[in-house]
Length: 222
Image 1: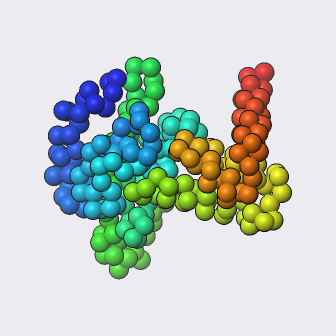
Image 2: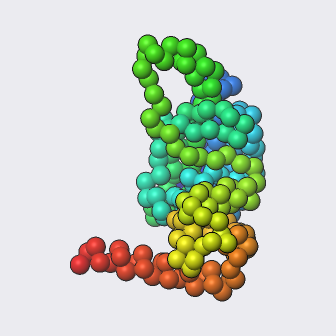
Image 3: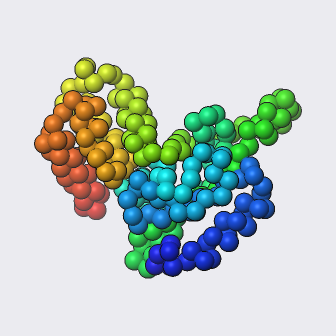
């Protein structure tokens, strides 16, 4: 497969087939990852599950795959949650072209909220637990995704920006870079505002972080 568009005549019926098989609790999404991350969804069935539509952006997990932080992004049967509290059992598989570049993704999100309500009444008998929880955020606007990553960054550092030293801010930039935040257009502006640094400082941090990462990677082979 060289592009999602080339295979769209096959992929669209596949989406409809999966959605029809599992009903209106099953959202099926096709992402084209060759364009800007601001608008990756090219087809979606049962979009009411996450409130998304054609033209909306991907989730935070896709950013990590595109950034290269995660080399094998395929995940199956993981648990995540929507903004309005639905619990989903999800699977995501990424498509690559002949060069091994990630070009698209097929995602299945099954709303198991009602099933969990029933499960809670018999948990003491089944002793079942959801042990594959993964944080995945579904948004319509890619700016909301950047805001989410900034919130997660704040939690990771564990202190307000006003109390952050240079080392803390560099850790924050590294956290955001690893999660693909800078693949989003104008994300740098938000990060600079959040960390109260200039663009010049941000680029210097990124350069230093990436040089150190390359040096560490090279040392592993020595």
